Length: 450
Image 1 (tube, rainbow, N blue to C red):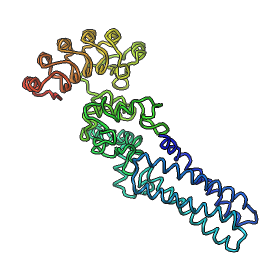
Image 2 (image 1 turned 30 degrees about the horizontal axis):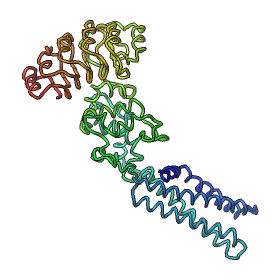
Image 3 (image 1 turned 180 degrees about the vertical axis):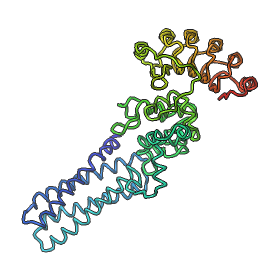
Image 4 (image 1 turned 120 degrees about the vertical axis):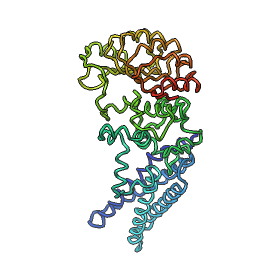
């Protein structure tokens, strides 16, 4: 609507009357302390400042029609704004028509005092709506400071590896992202779209359009859909002009929703995911991996560069180590033909993420030389039961993700696993509870996440 469009200019215009009126006020103070006469400039400044105050108040009222704001704060802000306009108008009339009267100086001082006080009150309520009611609060509690400091990726990176693994995924990674990029407009004071993102309960409750997220279904989650819109789209979130989520941060939130939006999972579990690991790789240094593999020479940099040209993420699992971690997270169109090039890493490849790519069973056959694969992520690919016999060749495997594939109970039963395997993820497949129960009888020491 045109009224909402005009209202959106309120944050832009609102600073003009503040600056102009304060400038006129400082001229008044200078005039009181010197013989210089600024009366004409002060009058012009007061008229212009008053005009912009009225325009700003009108735009603010139009913006409020969009809803999503704390009603009491909004009312205080609006009432104070209109009171400011009233006293500014009275001051203009006084200066224009009654400046020669004996009571002018005293009344002029009184009106300016009221205007400056009300101006700060208006600004305070406006800031509370935009940044939260406690944006000026000083937290002198050492305990609270420690908690707030812990809720960031940077502070988590300072912890030793064993403590990093115990950090809560939601509190340590997800909430800090929402707090930095989203909660400014979705809090208890400013509920854009009637949506609050300050707690998991409110996120699941959602706003005018329904729940913000759907656990285990990131693609159908409204919050994710808005994040993935073109930034030029009016419905893209965060809106234009606000701090934006980068691709890695969106991937992290996507991963969290797709894996159930849990508030209890620890970072140690999340670090098994290549998505999470790639997000925080520059922030969190994991403990040196214990591979149970012999030392090997470094891979030729030309081989690594040729794979990076395909858009693959290729890195040593640790500095100076010859074993490789490869992820196709940024190449969802990767197919069987392109995957053949990965085989050049042969026994150096130990961690492989092919999730959400276009590969088929044929791709697994091309990896026959990669005998040392320890972690294999094949989630949301077109693999079926025929791939199982090919997966059995990876005798060193300790982590397998087949979530979202067409593998069934028959395929699960054909897995011929060594004692190395520790974890299997297999929800959203054709595997049933009965198949899982039979598997657990055969392999009681393997954790199967169904």
